[in-house]
Length: 296
Image (cartoon, rainbow, N blue to C red; front, side, top):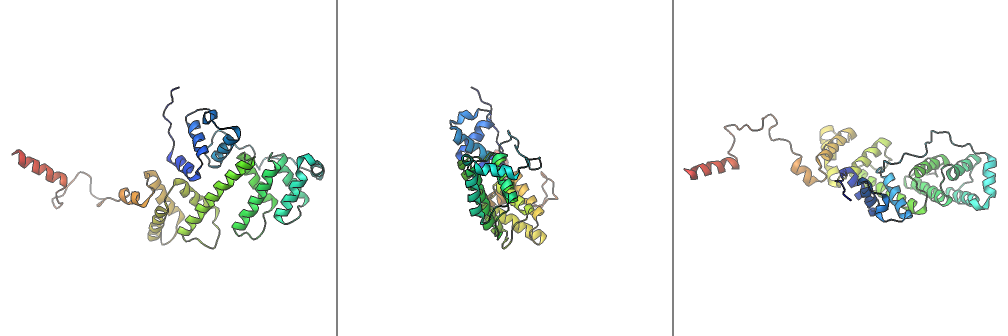
């Protein structure tokens, strides 16, 4: 078999490195080389976990979202809920109990319908939904929300899990691990920018996630922040983003790289190739003169 060269963008490489998951990186390489997923040698469960992480990273363009919250989903009734509660094989009654214990409240009729939709319409297994609810509750506590998430908020996250095909406990664990890394990185960047005591706005979070995906070292982000403050008097997100996007296009991700290559010309008004009489001779010019004298 003859394989053509595989071209992978630096942004994709940095996303894979940040995720720190070798299985996903290998699967991505196989797909980039237009090889079958079987070439990885993974069993079905391992392959699905790797594929789910690629979808989470936005590196799997082969599949479209299966669900849209704007679409008309089934309208479940109290009878549908009662029927599921009475069927022991479905485990729905047990799931309801687990969710109520986690949220610390009794689920309303509408809450039960939403929960039923997660298992019936989205097709998430009960044990995965249980993990999902605990994840949402813990995320709310870590963000200082002060109260448990509503079932509507949990349903929104359930759609994301269903679209990413996070339908096993192993995939859920991989997803939460990657989210933990992402949140930890956001915390580092907030500290560098002096953002404390408040939540990020959606726009601010998008900027920080984009810079994280670009792969900048902390000192590079700090340098961009300093330049932004010097030129604008404070943190101006668009201005700082323009600096980092320029460095990203130049492949500069550390302070050493930036200081070595991202320099302005000594005199921008001068045209390259022209030398004034007042300029000192360059090393190349001195060598040329020396060579001429030796030839004479």
